[in-house]
Image: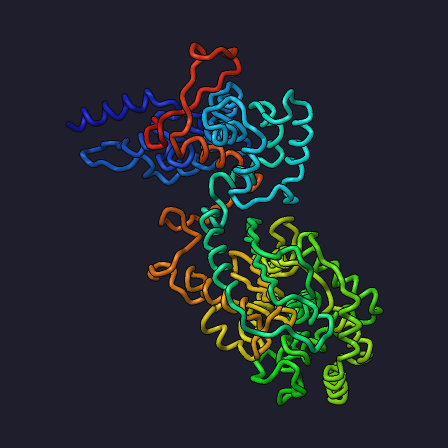
Length: 567
């Protein structure tokens, strides 16, 4: 029986194909290779693990002699068999792709959109692209859109694209486009999510309560009927509804943004030498400091004025203003960020309360040494008068949701520390005297302003901006508060919603009831993404050279079986 097992193993051994010869093994007949050496060096090592020697009726492993271990070290210059196998597999895959057997990402994207047709109308591609949440004006798709426009000018009808022209247009942005069409973004089913947002918008639109702020003359000129909601996800998916292109001033919504800039420049420890972290429990413009003679937090006027003094210290107001504007434009992905000089003049002319706060804090030595308080107040009024639209502000909010990276440009704007601290204070102090109730009912970081804006952040998911001028008695947008409350009643965005067991709410991060896999594809993951597309679903019809009129050297043979059916 032992002889039979031994002969079987030897037969298996003789048929195995070793990837490389082992060097340095003694020619002495009594010496034998160490099985553990083969386990790590070649795929057929399992054969050697079965080999035993039999001596005087006792069996023991071949590697029992300690001197044999010397031959198991990897010698210099010898290629690891596992590395060689991987290289062979990569070379095989490359040959298959070159031969047309494995479709490229561009091919797969074409057949996904074409749905069996030989050409794609340009408008069909654009419509399908918008359904994913991406915009044709997305900076990341500039090369694709420019090439599409140029290519259509050269086509006979100026409308349709064949496979070759389509691939030419999309190849520069193929990874992003593939992520979009394979529903790998944070909101996989974006059209369904957008329809829910539209419903929430219409529900809040019917509210007619509140008064437009009139203590600043320029704010009183806005119509109470204006109402807009815009969102941007961390993947750059966009949706807007209402008056989203009307510019309005940030007012207090700029407070978390300039605090983030200050922390980004100086760090948390330095900034909080001058400003506290606690909710004040008082009106936002109250002339009051904490027990350490510091403003309670950077979201009230006193704290925001001190925070303003920390930005670009020693520079003139013009240089400081350009510095902040540059930051905000980067956060907005270079979308609209402007300035209302009329609002600035109104702010300065009616800013007696802020001047009183400034002088009080100067007396208490709240500012860094050498600070010109009146100059800082001018700069403070300027920052409050910066204009945005709902659309551009939603990208700013999404930059905060995305850890400081602008989602539509990919540029790092703020440090993770600055974003974390900003969101923490927005959560506890961002909604004036309504901050506690908002944290309880909505459970998300937010900041409101007297112009009617609410900047809302769903961390790691999206940024949302609501804007409607009528305010409640606490200074928050009536429609905006209603929208935010309804949002977390429909979706499980509240920070303390249980994502696994709270079945009463929708989770837009799920697709088909399954938890979205946290899988991101970058430029270096081309091969994995290609296999994901080609092998996951049975989408393509198999074509052979005999069934096609194309030349066999360029014929693509599409897979019909699923991953589990592969041999």
